Amino acid sequence: MLDKTLLRKRFEKGFDTYRKNAFIQSKTAQRIIEIILKSNKNFKTIYEIGAGEGLLTELLSEKLFYDTFYANDIVESAGYLIKNINNKIIFQPGDIEELTLPKGLDLVVSNAVLQWVEDLDGLVKKIKENLNPGGMFIFSSFGEQNLIELKKITGAGLRYKDLDELKNIFSNYFDIFYFDDYIEKLYFDKPFEVLNHLKFTGTNAIIKTHWTKTKLKDFIAKYEELREQSGIPVTYHPVIIGGIAK
Image (cartoon, rainbow, N blue to C red; front, side):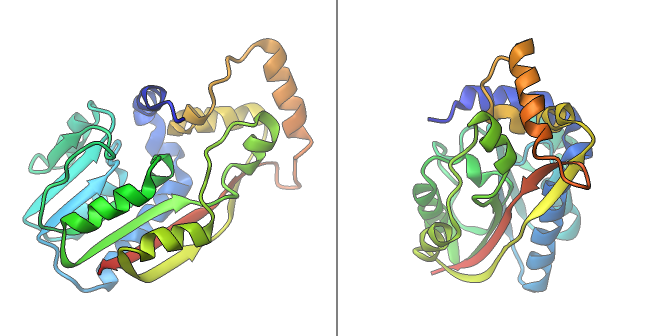
């Protein structure tokens, strides 16, 4: 079971360093905005799941016209960051799986968050039930190859859903109009830099290991065996899905 207390702590610590290190998440946020703009739809009421320090929130606020904008995050202190982006945004703190969503939404968005959700089918159903007819839900998450090196070495990692499973869950409640997945690798000079990268983006919430000198030495040695010509690899497997409520 996912330790959501640890998740809150790690992401809160990573807020100051997230944007400078979330290279993949920045790209998926841009893709989400592009998809929304191409739809040529008007969205009076927007809800963002897992706004964090506001990477996608800022883009949504700048690019879209809306009457009401709700932003959620599991970290309560994120509210201060979101208010700094736009003080008209209504911040809703808490675990999205436990919260009651407002009715009458036109657009629900989420960037690099839903891989942390334990009951994805339940959440997708709840989103559909609170969208207006023809409302849109667009999100990015990650597939099975995500952070595969880390899982090979430490055994730590999320249980990422395969693409068919994601499609099946989503298509139960939405007509899919956009689906894309791809592999992208980041490269670092040293294995220790990988741990810093995960720390600076809050993604180290998947690792509960207490790093002793022995464990760290073993981690470095095993990761060095995976070195490629471009350096020490970190594999990301983004998945982006868009749908219209049935």
